[in-house]
Length: 333
Ligand code: SF4
Image 1: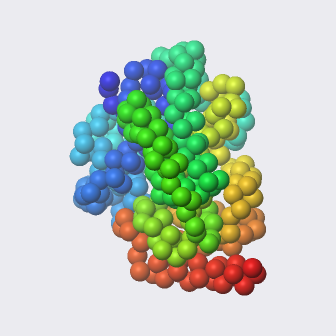
Image 2: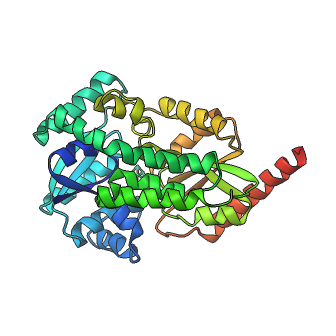
Image 3: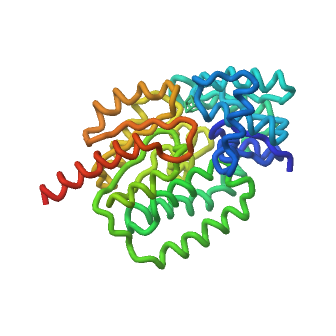
């Protein structure tokens, strides 16, 4: 199967129906032991220091790994991607644009996905067949999520890892399905984790995945990973078609719809506090203002840049925040 790179979550059902193997470029970047080299490649090519590391990482991956085709999400995700795909196109990489509509209406979502299907010469029926074939994988990811917040057996990192991987099913759907099944079997046999604080992680998936272990060292567990969960489409089983599945995806549209789902999950998962992660130089940091005002639970905003581990200042802030929450919770008890 021919590989096609993704800059973020897109309707992979269409790409698989067109005979492609989708590969999430973010995952290649961040799981590489030598992830910094991808950033260096971009900076040597002229990408500014003051630009989000994900964009530079994606560029480096495309160049270094010989990616020939990319689906670039030029609407509803990130304006930096627009400039990125223009540069990639100049380098000879074939770009297939996709846009999430700014206004979240079913009509607009239908229009964009229909344009996308036409680009790849894929019928709705063929895309729906793939959607059905992906349903068992989505159900398994949902089970891992349930094992995190209901049974307290899956760790925050496992929750993050398995759900974020749904953006491309790790490039091999059968192997990924088996991996999820094995993980569920192992997790179910464990005793529940006994952490005193229940946290929500909201915002783009972290560059600094050690945040999960760090929280655990301070008596806290992440029992909700907002965007990673959206990548896994946990409500896909309630969507009657492909259009509605992507209409019900919270991340690319306005913040109000996204906020409603976060609030619902905060209640359901009995969340004590929220960590809002944003990437340095990302416009999404501004959303912190609205989130802080509306979510109604303590919230800490942290920012990652090029490092894939938490820096000392962020660790200090997290530690102080978690200590304060623990005092409050134990004081109340
Ligand atoms: S973190 Fe922000 S700036 Fe970076 S790719 Fe994502 S949306 Fe764009």
